[in-house]
Every structure is written in structure tokens, then in C-alpha cells.
Image (cartoon, rainbow, N blue to C red; front, top):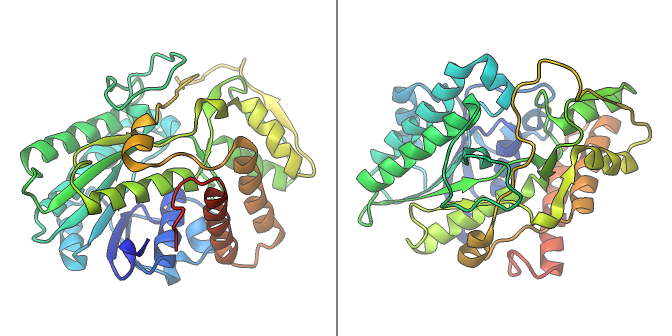
Length: 364
């Protein structure tokens, strides 16, 4: 883990749910973290309540502004880049399809252009989504070589980004390039500090914290739930692998739980209720005006296990427990920083991984 000590790491989307967790984790490993984000996407925000702004160098700019993106990359001269800035909500993509495509596809191109102008070695992890696959809702997991597609604007925008990444790898970032780049695909992430709209866990936490009922659109949908630290550990593992050799350069990797961790939305809610005093929810699956949402989407993560020695660490019960306990701690102590508790959960995650002899047995 000394890979990141005293290294400059650019994280785009650092004010978001996953970005704030990654910023805290990498800063705790001794990295100089530089953040690029347009705004703070939610209120409350893990970025604010965990005091991430005290840990990093914060820059606010629109990722669609090519000139400003390139200027920041030239200024900070990053050793690593984790690109996760995005319009990340499927339902919002129906309301603002053009904005979604601009942010997710052209924003990714702006990052690639900025990196292309660097004259130093740099490791880049481009985070897209599990929704890049042409989802026909079969029962087995999609492999990295399966066809890309997208029935909604969000999925399509991420597929566009992947096409652009492939173009830059083949055209500019060849074996003699100073750039090594990998693509990470993950989805259905839960964990403390997510307050995005129209997501099951944040919706439940907001409602239950004020003793209200929550409306659930599709309680029978099945998802491979994973804690936020699972894909982040995969992104870090990919970055380390790219640093050590170029064998993963230009490759895509899935990061997700095993098929035994697929549970219905209703089962997730039932498990969450074990850690909350009073819960109530409504089944809204029969109501009208539903936009298209996948009923089933699985990832095959054999490539990540074989090439990166990565696999998911937490079981379903551990995932839900850590998630709900984070929110419960926040709502019980709203005037306190969540930084210490967030670091404690990162350390707990690593401890569990060690006990199970999984990722980073030599984590130091």
C-alpha cells in the first residue's frame, strides 16, 4: 500500500458518494489527493460531514470545460487519476439526456485529452458502470468481452465513454506511452453517506430517520448488492497492478459480489430493518409512469480474481450492517464529524479481508 504514499492523486467526482470515500481512504495512505468536481451533489453530503475538504486540495470546475480540465491536470501533474465524475442516476438521465451524455462521455474525453498532454508517467483508472452491457437479463454474469449497449441515456452515455477510452488507448496510449489506463465497471453500491435521490438505501434512511414510510418502486427486482468499499478496493487494486506492469493496460475489469449475494429489494429492506428501530414501506410496483430499469444484472468477476487477485470481501449481512450502522451513527450524532467512523469502517473492512485471507493480506 506504500504505492500511494506521497503520490499526487487526482480524483474526479471527489465530492460524491464514492469519491468522498475514495478520497478519505487514499489520504489515509499518505497520498496528496486533488479533487475535481462541479459541486456537492447532495445535502447532507459525506464530503461535508466527514470533513473531506480538510484532507485534500479541492477544485470546483465543470468537467465539460476542456480548457479548465487540461489546466488543472497540467497544474497538479498527477501520478494517478481516478475518474468517476458523472451524472450517475438512470432516472435523471431520462429527464436530462443531453446533459448526461455530455458529462459522462465528453467529460471522459476531456480527462483523456488532459492526460494525453502530460509528459510524465501516469496511472489512470476510468470508472464507468455495470450498465454499459447490453442487458438481456440473463441469469449468468456478464464478462468483460460481452457486448456493450444501453437502453437508457445513462447506460448509453457510459457505453459512449468506453468507446472513447478504447479509441484513446489504441490511438495514443500504446505500449510506449507514459500512460497506463484501465477501465473499472461496477454497480449497485450501497454504504453510508449516500443521499442521492431515487436510491433505495438513501430513500429508506431519510424516511425512517423521521419515522415516515418509504415508497419502493420495484421490491421484486434482484440486485448484486455490494458495499462501497468493495469496488473502491478493486479500483485501488487495478491502479496498483497498472503501476507494477503494463499487462492490464487498456483492459476492462468487473468489480462485484459473487452470485450468492443476489437479493431482492424486499430482502434488502428486511435485512436493513434488523438495525433500525421502526421501519415502514409501500410497494409501488403497480403504479404507472415507471421508466425502464433493469430487473436483473449480474457481473462475472473471474478476470479480476485471476489477473488482480481481487474478490469481494463482505457477505450480504456484513454489507447491510455496516451500511445501516453508518447512517444510524450519523442521525444519532448529527453535530459530529463522521470522519473517524468512516475511517473505522475502512479499517474494519481491511480486518475482515485479512481474516478471510482475501485482498491485501499484507496491508500495512
